[in-house]
Length: 231
Ligand SMILES: [Mn+2]
Image 1 (cartoon, helix red, strand yellow):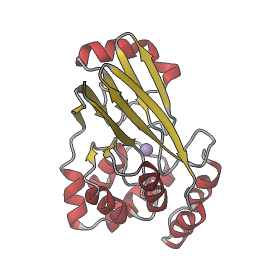
Image 2 (image 1 turned 120 degrees about the horizontal axis):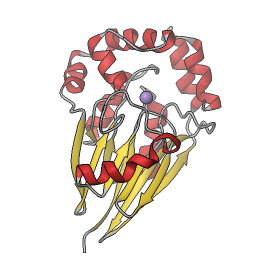
Image 3 (image 1 turned 90 degrees about the vertical axis):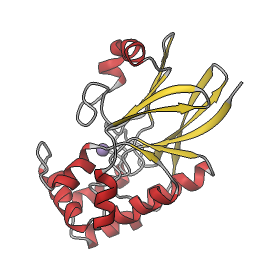
């Protein structure tokens, strides 16, 4: 029976210190990233380069998309300012890297077929999937996609749902948690034969250093402040 452990991250949002902390915590594992590598924070190039170095399997998020287009349609004013800043500060190489990311992927995790995307299976970039609002659809998603696992990001709120059809989860946000816990959030998926478990993990990181870079970059101060409250 095949077995393996896989690291799932999402919504890093240009927060290098948080990304370094979760990678160190997880150790050497295959990395899957569900989008929004950039946006909000001050280290977009460093974050993309570290993800490339780790050979992360990635999908595109709405903030990655906005940084590519330079047109932050549908964003609040602070997010829009950050998207324009990111667009101006991305290296051409990293811009090309983001532009080549797919909106969803099918991956095989030690024999377990899985689907990964940023938003929902229906709207990969924009739809927010919370357990409270969408759990009635989870069995339907799993059957329709013919997978045993679906990993989604975008909400910055972690959850794991399991039913007879399989598992749907969100690893939360590495770089800008919004569930009231400011520690970086990620998940480890363990596959052992037909058994799949998802373990949520939280990791302390140097929030002050990350916040300082946001202020020094001239980005909206609220984006620095929210890191310490996790909302
Ligand atoms: Mn996000």
